[in-house]
Image: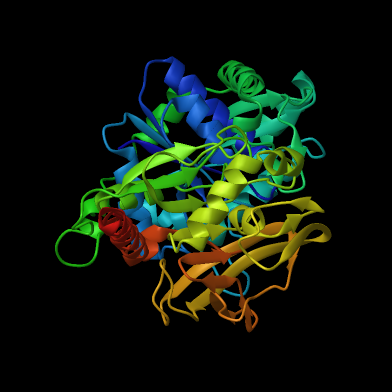
Length: 464
């Protein structure tokens, strides 16, 4: 599998521009391009998916463990002609206090992939050679195959940069001039997700492809990608990862409804794959538009996103709020992460929500961001007490109280506290998790949905 990792010395250098532009430019050539993102970020993979027509997939060595990075990559890249991995932060930046763990450099080494370094050259000339030399020599196991220079000011500036890098023996694989940024608007947690601006996002991706195609040597980049040696691992398989004996759905395939639409855009592709492998029929619904849950809903998954942006619209959909509340009150299994937690609260910024939890949420000035190590405190439809998972928090809201009488998680690192709510079939928390790291949660949730379906059917049959 030809593959490249697109990295940078620091955030803001142009990784997303180059990575997304490369994906789109190669896809325009008729190649099947597999898009990947190092780290936990949900938003960039949405743009990658637009560029390639394939699901954007995350490779996170902290949440899933280093041993799963290559298998998950191989699973996502199956049948493709090229894979492009966008890095996270600076090349050697990883989980705080954990050395290289979860860094782009670690992902590149685990994938045995050459690295293309995107350098913001706007304020330097010959010094670029010293910068690139430092990144190339810092870890000999990281193979830096070339540089793409970003924000180059003029022909003369380009000549000086090329001369410096030629002396250092580093190939220049592309030069992008200073230009108005392609329209990819941001908000407090990064780029605005694709689902909120699909037409504009398509235009932005097309512009990125044109920018990269005009400034980069695509043939040289493809030749570099082909130097990646074979990976000695089997692709990850959701069916093989499923734990537990026998069918997860002994009473038929339960319908698991997954929230989507503009307000709930944060999800990992592997979650739906694991639910399907466990025996569920996965159906999406949009809490902004749909007034009822999908027919036969037996489990409800409400992931992350930006409910605070859509609080008035979510609140105005009283019919669906009532349906969610009734489903939870009847004991139906519900798994809610971050945005889902807020949606289940009594209110969000003063707007009525579903009222499943005795808690109120509001926007905050403080950004809560970072990896967490957690243990399930209470038995729930998602996890047995004692289950250990790694995840991340990423929000600028607070909920009061922060935990119920039966908390969802106890954090063991980097701080010790309890968080979230378990109530009947509901598991609600700020913590984002990657179920590939612990496939038993998908099996357990699907089994809970199947049991709930059977109980509802039996109760209905018993009525006169």
